[in-house]
Amino acid sequence: MKKFKRIFVIVADSLGVGELPDAEKYNDVGANTLGHIANKYKGFNIPTLEKLGIGYLTRCETVSANLAPNGIVGKMGELSVGKDTLTGHFEIMGLEVKTPFPSFTDTGFPIELIEELEKFSGRKVIGNISASGTEIIKDLGEEQLATGALIVYTSADSVLQIAANEEIIPLEELYRICEYARKITIQNPEWMVGRIIARPFVGTNKENFKRTTNRHDYALKPFGKTVLNSLKDKNYDVIAVGKINDIFNGEGVTKSYKTVSNSNGMDITIDLLKEDFTGLCFVNLVDFDALYGHRRDLDGYANAIMEFDLQLYEFIQNMNEDDLVMVVADHGNDPVHHGTDHTREYTPLVIYHHNVKGGILPVSKTFAVVGATIADNFEVEAPVIGESILERITK
Image 1 (tube, helix red, strand yellow):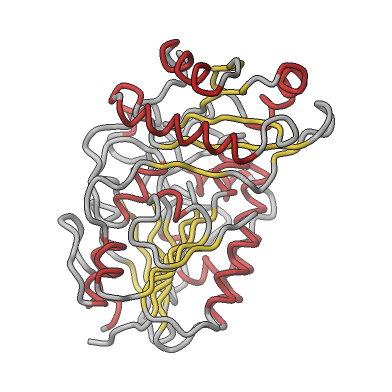
Image 2 (spheres, one colour):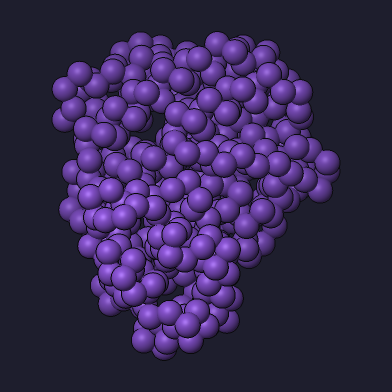
């Protein structure tokens, strides 16, 4: 059986391919991120993914499913409960999340939690609502400039976000407050959100406020051993690009790169093809989700996919013979669905290497098929969930 020296897993964050059977439990009946974008955006064109076979995964009027795929494609179901970032990524690398992370979308955070933050920081908290990160700094940024308060908000995800103008609250102070928020939310299970996020911004008024690239995520440490740990324990390289390092709280990562956009993330990943390493490169492209899915921006999402498709072509052209790439997602975020929440969907598994024999896989019951295949390739400890498809990929 052929083994790959390097495996690249690229998470197209939130690019779901149709509702899961239990979507009704999540109020997500009818959700289909890729399908709705492909069918509603005039001029949608993704020739690289189309040739790989992504059109076979969901009904797309503008993406053909009539050609024999030159990649291997399949759909993955989600075994874990929930539909958030941590849940999806943890499952990809072999952990089943059986208890959902709490969210405070409808209620705001408990007053006791807010009082703890105010006492520790010596600053008043304003906001404490579910909001878009760009909109809330427009609404409350000038008040922060005048008072030095902390802007605390959440979203449809399991997150507590703290926005602060870098001229008013220096980064070190903001990070220290977020670290404290992480500490107290771990200590109280009812408050234990998946991530605390520092959201610094700059500007002098609501017309020119702009978030900076100094964002920092404080995620929960994975509650068990992932494939990343198994690889690192056997001295393989585990390179994280984008928010992967934050999502896994550094667990199992040997080197990481921050990104400022999807395009920048792909540029870094393409450059990494020139590096001599053995192991995994794990990439997250967050713009699909953060900039377009949550904001229900179908046009923006469509253009982001098309830009990614061009860069994926460049990536494939520069792959080595012993490289493997898997394009996946961690949940859905249908831009034509109601609300601003993630959507409970199947996710794509699009696989390519230069000697691949194209085809269509049976539906997988778990995202962990990815982690199991990686573990099989490098002969490290396999996750408890998920079955390897390495033999199918290499035959």
